[in-house]
Length: 119
Image 1 (cartoon, one colour):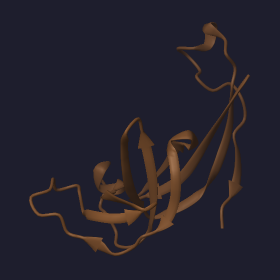
Image 2 (spheres, rainbow, N blue to C red):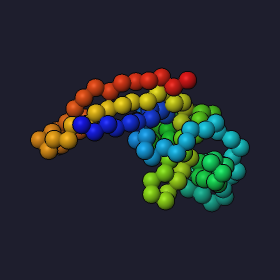
Image 3 (cartoon, one colour):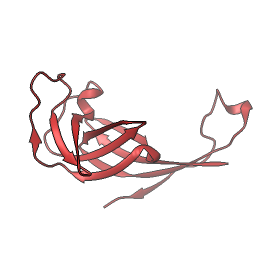
Image 4 (spheres, helix red, strand yellow):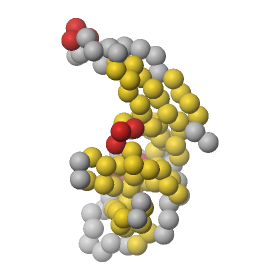
């Protein structure tokens, strides 16, 4: 069985599980520098992990109404690094995936997920 770890966040009315292997850090939202002529979903630039990154509200990306405040989840997929603003981090989930081709298309997770509160 394969262990899969997820960071669970709240964004608008949605609960989202992000693969933990893509999460570089979770940080307090800092000062935001406006970026003229940027796409509507880019709120501006923020300094996180010693890098200047585009900040995007995850709720708005998902078509939800975005609230002020929250925390930043810095994600990296390949060389694309972004700071996603979420309402709050809800916890972590550990899921176990049975590597069985019979279940691959029907049930991607065959196991029990555990929640651990993050405070």
